[in-house]
Image (cartoon, rainbow, N blue to C red; front, side):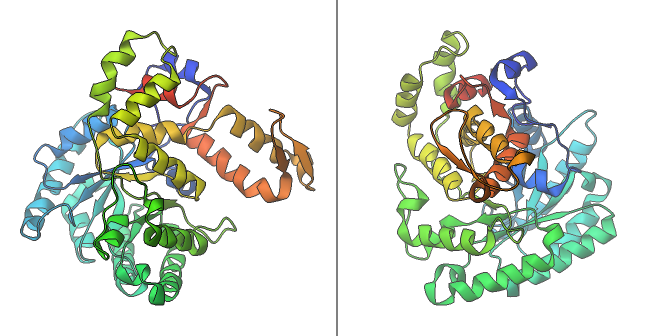
Length: 388
C-alpha cells in the first residue's frame, strides 16, 4: 500500500517531486507510525465490514480501527466479536485483496488473546489493538495480554493506547498520570506504534463540545492536555512516541459535493481561493485548521470517523517542496558541525543544530506521504485524490 496509491500513476507523477513510498504491515515500526495518516474508525458490528474495508482501501485509506468499545452498545459486544471473526475470514479468502493496516479496539485485556485465537489464520491481516482509557494501572494488563497473544500467534502485533482518562485531564493528577503512562509504554516500546488522544472524553468531563468552526486548540482545558502529552511523551530526543491528532466530530459528504465542480476543470486549474471558499461554506474549514494546528503542535496523523476526513488529512500531510529543500539542506553531511544558512528559497534562516530534529521528522513524513512538486499544493492534491 502507499498514500495516494488509489490515483493513476501518471497523475502521481504530475503531483509529486518524490512519490510516497510503498509499505506493508511488516514494514519497520518507525515508518508505519508516520504513515498511519487518517485512521478511520468503524463499528465492529457493521454487517458488510469486509466490503467496507476493501472499498475504503480503494479510496486511499491505509489504516482502520474496528471498534468494540464506545461505538457500539454494551449488549452488542459479543455480536461484534463474532462479526469480526466472520469478516476477517471473508477478507482473508479474497484473492489479491490488500486491506489497510487493521486494528481492533477492545474493552478488556482478555479480549486480545481470545480474538487472536478465534481469528486463526485470518489473524495475519491484523496489525494490532487499540487500548482504551490508558493509564499505567489499566494499561499494563492490556500490554501483557498483547505480548502473550503475539507470542501465541507468532506474528508482530502493535498497541495504540488511547489517552483519554479523567486522571490525565485533571491538573492535580496529570503529571503523575503522564509519568505512569510513560513508564508503561517505555517498558513495551517495541510494541507501541502510536499514542492516540481521546479529546471527546476530555470534553465530556466538563460537559463541553466544540462547535464546527472551532478546533480542539480553542478549548483551553483540552489544549493544555495536548501540550502536556506532547511535552512528556512526544519528545524528539529518542524517548518520545508518535502522538496522533484528535477526532473531528463533524462531517458532510464533501467528496460528493466537490466532485462535479472539480471534474469540470482540467487538472490543476481549480483556483485555490475558489475551493477554499467552498470548503469553508461546507463546514470543512474547522477541520483544515485543526489538522494544521495538529502538525504545528507535534502531532502526526488523525483519528477519523468519516471517510470525507481522510483526504484532507492526507493532502495536508504531504511535504511541500520548500519544506523538503530546507530539510535536505539542514541534514547534509557537511552541515554536521552546525551553523546557519539561508534557505534555497531565500526566505528564511535554517539553523542546523536547532532545526535538525524537525528536518529528520520532515524527511520521514516525506517518505510516507511524498513531496509535492514546487507548483503543487493542497488544492491540487485534494482535487486529484477525490475518488472518481
